[in-house]
Length: 71
Ligand SMILES: [Zn+2]
Image (tube, rainbow, N blue to C red; front, side, top):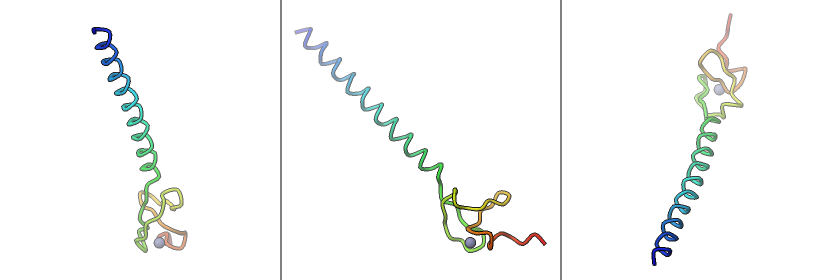
């Protein structure tokens, strides 16, 4: 009977380990998706992926046309 009990504990422990590993993978996926965040163009206020945005200082713009004029 004790063997059955130990086996049950092991099964639960293994299940929890697999569950935690899967949750950790999910968390990584979410955080990597968040790192490719959407940013807002300061000029026209549309949202664009940060990797497609043009950064100027601490602000983002959707295109060169919307960059503030430097002159
Ligand atoms: Zn814009």
